[in-house]
Image 1 (cartoon, rainbow over the protein chains, first blue to last red):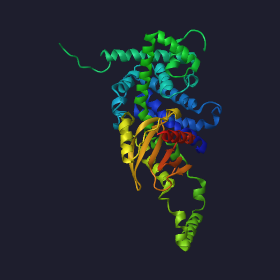
Image 2: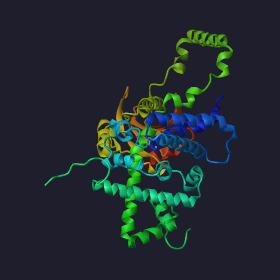
Image 3: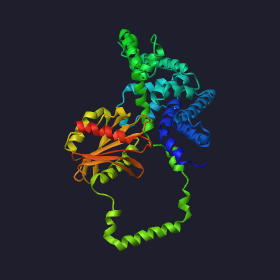
Image 4: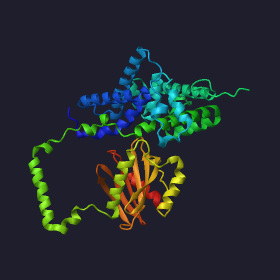
Length: 178
Length: 257
C-alpha cells in the first residue's frame, strides 16, 4: 500500500501522542509500540474510507483505544493483572526529567489502578487534550458519560493519592517506631 | 448547560479550562462559597499536571524507526527512471562550475554570515537536540532563572525565555550551542501534541537588523529575523503548525525587554 504524502503529513505529527496514550494504557513499552504500529497499519489500510469530515485525531485514537482494550482484555483472560513493567521507574525517568516531583511518578502508578474506562477518559481529556465531544466519539459513549466517568476518575485518583500520602497503599513506607 | 445551578460537569469543565467566560465566572463565585470543593478541584488540577509531566517525556522521544511513516515512503518513481540523465546533469554542473570558476562560487557555497547562516545553525541545532530523548536541554524549565542569566551572560545582553503559552507552547529548557560566530542560545518548547519547537538566538555582526524570512533547511522549517544586533530563529518539523505567529509572539516579547 503506497503512502500518500497527504497521509504522512497529517498522521506523522500525531504519532508521539499515540505512543504516549498507548504507553499509559498498557504500561509496557514494547507492547505499546506494537499497538501503535497496528494502528498505523489500519490507518494506512482505511485511509481512503475514513469519514473525511471527522477529526483525524479522534479517528486514530478510536482505533488505538479499541486495540488497547482488546489487548488489556486478552491479558486479563490470561490472568495477568499486575502492571507489566514499571513505566514510572525504568522507562520514564530520564535525566532531563529527574526534577519532576514524587507526585508525577506516583500518579502514574496510581492511574494503573483505575478501571480502564476511567483511566482512558482521564488520559484522553487531561493528557491528550481531546475535546469532550472527541473523547465521547473515541469511547463511543454519550458526552454525559464522559463527564461522569471523568468525575469518578478524578475523585478516585484523589482519594488514592490521599491514602498513599497516609501510607496506606502503594509503596512500602518507612515508619517511625516509637 | 449555561444557566441554572452549578453541576459536577461544570466543575470538571472548570478544571479543564473549558467553560465559557460567563459560566467560568459563575463557577468561580460558587467555589468561593464552597472552599471544600475548591480544594478538591485544585487537587484534580495538580494531579492532571503531574500526569502530563510524567507522560510527556514519551511524546518527546523521537519516533522509533518502525513507526516512522517517512521511512516507509517508497522510492519515488523519478529516482529510478533515468540515472544516466542524473549523472549527465551532475557532470554538466561540474563542467559549468569548472568553466566559470569563482563566478559561481557565491551561488554554490553555503552562506556563512547573516540570518541565512543563522538559519542553518538553528536548523542543525534543532536536528541534534530536539530529537534527543534523554537530554534535549542542559537546564530544564524549572531552572528558568539560571538559564536566562546564563544566556544573558554568554550573549552579553539581557535574554529572557519568552512566555509562549499563548501559542500553546511550554518551555522545556535550553542549552548553549557553539557556532563559528560564538555562542548561541537554544530554547526548546513543547506544543500541545508534544512536538518540539526551537527558539535560537545569537548576536549578529552582519544583518544586525533583518526582516522576517521563511526558511527551510534539511526538512526543518521556520522563520528568522534580526533586531538591534540580535538574530532569532524559530524552527520546528511539525507540518501545519503556525510558526509565523509564534515568531511574531517571540519578536514582540523581545521588543519589550
